Length: 534
Image (cartoon, rainbow, N blue to C red; front, side, top):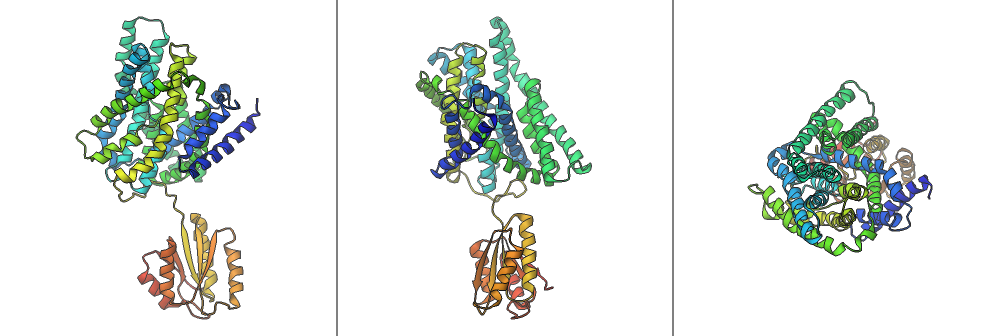
C-alpha cells in the first residue's frame, strides 16, 4: 500500500495535470480529473483502494461544502423572487419525474421490483452540484441569462432537487433494508412528502440562523481580523452542518449550507465579497480531490454486463422523465423556447451524489445492488463530462447576454494599471502610487514612458527605479514619442487597462504638464488617477 502522503501528492499533481491536459484538448478539466481517479483507483493501478477512498470521504465532503457555499453566495434574491415558482418547480418536478421513469424502465428492462426501481431513480435523478454550480456561476459572471435569473433558478432548483431525492433515497433504503410487510413500506413512502417539506424548511431556517450568528460574531464582535480567518470560521461551521445532517437527518445539510451562503450575502454583502474570493480559490484544490476521488470510486468491472441497458435507461429517463419535468417547471413562465432548451445541457449532469450513495445498496446486500452501482457509475461517466462541456457551448446560443451585477459574482479578470511617466521628479511618485495600487488589487502594470529622446541617459535611471519599486509586480515597459494625451488614451484602450495613473504636473522636460493631465481626464473613457508632484 502506498504511503498516505504519496497518495495525496498523486491526487493533487495527477488531478491538476490531467485536468490541464484535457482542457488543452478543448474538453472540461473535470473529465481529466475523473480519468486520473480511474487510473489511480481499483480499475487502474489500485493506489486508491475502496478503503482509502472511504477514509478520504471527509475531503469529498469539504469539496461539496465549498461548492454549496459558492452557490449560496452567488444567488440573487431579486432574481429568485422573479423566478421563485420556476426555481421551486425545478427543484421538485424534473428529479421526481426522472425518478418515476427510471423506476418504470427498471421494472420492465431490468426486472427490478417497484421499490428497488424507485431507489435507483432517486440515485440517478439527483443532479451534480460539482458540475452545475461552477458552470452557472461562470455564466452569471459573463452575464448569460442573468436578466431573468435563469442561472439562479437552476442553482436553487438543483439544491432543492438533491435535498428531496436524498431524503427519498434514505427512506426507501430503510424500508428495503428491513424485513417488514408491504403495508408498512407504503405507509413509510406516503410520509415522504411531509418529511421532505420539513427537512427543506428546517434546513433553510438553520442556514438563516447560523448566518445571523456568524455575522454577529465576525462583524460586531470582531472574532476574525482577516478574510482568511473569516473563511476558516465559516468553512468549519458549514462543514459541521453537513456532518450533523448526515448523523441526525432532521434537516437537509446541503440546503442548510447553501442557505447559509445566501443569507450571508443578503445580510452582510462586504463579508460575502471576501468569502466569494476565498471560496473561489479553495475550490481550485477542492475540485481536484472531489473529481479524482469520484473517478476512483467508479468500478468499471460492474459495467460489463449492464452498460447497454444502462445507456438505454439513462436516455429514456432523460428525454421522457426530465423532459416532462422541465416542461411542467417552466409552464406559464416568461422563458423563451431557447431558454427552456438550455435546461437539457444545464440541468442533467450527475456526479457527486451518485458517487456518494451509488454503492450503498450493494454494501447493505440489497438485491440488484451491483446493477444499481453500475448504472450510477455509468451516469457519472456519461453526463458529468457532457454537461460540463455542453453548458458553456450552448449558453451563448440559447441565452441572452445581460448586464452583470458586480455584487453577486466573483470577478477573475486581471486588473492592469497604466503608469504614464516622463523624466521629471513626479515619475517616482507615479511609480510608488502605481505599485501601491497594484499590490492592493493583485494587478499588473504597464509603464508608458513619454520621451522626446528615446536614447536619453535618464532611461537607465528610470529603469532602475522601476525595478526597485515594482520588483514584486508583473510589469511591462513601453516608450512613445508623439502626441502625449492621445497616446496615453489610445494605449490604455488597446491594452484594456483598468485605470491610468498620471502626474499632475511634470518638471524637468515638462512633457506631462497640467494641460496633458487635463486633456487625458477630459478624453479618457478609463478612470484616471492623478498624482501630485512631491
